[in-house]
Amino acid sequence: MDMKKMMKQAQKMQRDAALAQEEIAAMTFEASAGGGMVKATATGDMTITGIAIDPAAVDPEDVEMLQDMVVAAVNEALRSASEAANARMNAVMGGMKIPGLM
Image 1: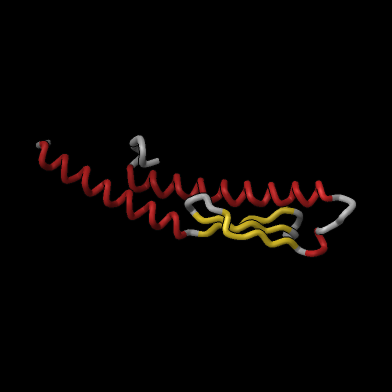
Image 2 (image 1 turned 90 degrees about the vertical axis):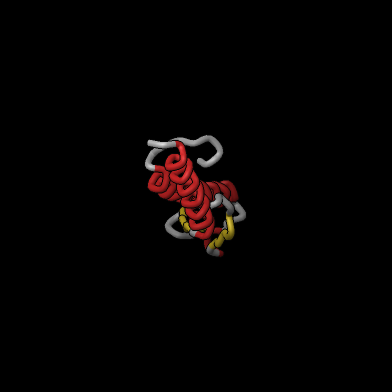
């Protein structure tokens, strides 16, 4: 394979990866805990964009349980976003690991 063809393929892969990163950042992921009493929403770029708490989950006598539900919902939303991002980038990169892109 000649160098010119390899450079074109590398540039296409770079463009595809940049487009995939934009798509991933625009995705949203929602997760809940406590039977849906706490919901967290995250974007594909690992930003938490919302937390919704059912008023019934607010018990002044058990703040720890509410805190645990928030942490669980946030972690699950971020895990879902991370898995989707990894799957999308693997599809674009064909499983190649390139530092700085993933």
